[in-house]
Length: 434
Image (cartoon, one colour):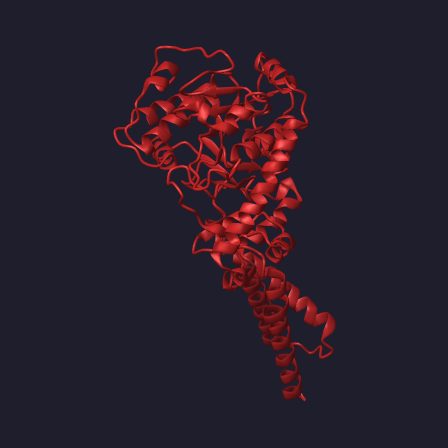
């Protein structure tokens, strides 16, 4: 009797595991980027590039339509009134430079998409009338950046090597001397990138807002940005223990971190996540066996075995689905986003308190050797010891498949499909988009 029950139990467990990992998950996760089944699929790079380019083209059309629907000059008047306000809460700088494309007819339109998303965010409930947005064009020949030139009719702008649509207050300090930025001859691509970033930071700081949000032109804000950012600033970055709200000291809040590095790894926090998922699975397994298995004389060892099987089932499921996809569940509520210490990479979307900008830009513009800007910023943080934070999941999507520093270099493609619906990917694969 006991042996037959044991066999029945083993066969049930085997069937559940086979159904989950050989049938159900392959169907659900075949088109889910960062899942094990997506990586195992026989997808060619050309097909993925075609899908990403097709979706990017649709977003460019949507961004054009968004700006074309606005009354000429109305947006500029709106931001002019915000810029003249004495209580600007947030200044957003969209750092942009033109990209070299192999096909001259190809319209990447990254800055159009980013600007449309940021304009919507700036007019959202929590940030309306207290957020100033401008496009920071750092092209050596600003008029050659066609998309930035198009946006002049809709958004304020500042050109490092050209004109600025608003007045800049210059001074003799090198980190704020805008004429120095314009006449500076950068000896390397990395040096120019760092000086460009410093210039845009200082232009943004000149509005005397509490915070500055630096957004690179290939980062699109998520629709939850307004609600989650407001909640984070009011709760995680404000100390109310002294009876009155007081802002915590921090260097920056990172709103984007590459998805390819957000998977499960041998890190304490991520291993703890897996253990927590496993514990939930163990509890569910014990409850399921108690409710549905008729043989109720469960010994301590059998319950322990059920718990282990449940833990293994949930942990393997999480591993195969991918942490990036599991984290999307957190978007159900602003309370579920994780607030944690920031990693060193990258600068697609960074929120700075205004007080950190002067020492940061002074450090960046007095370096003796230059590398990636994000590494230089991280070195500054290591020297000062000021706290830095980031939110997960990301509040920005990275769309810049075409790099600015490395001409014609295509980055890892999986990350550019991540924010697309699996059904959309499948439908596009069936279309003739080549």
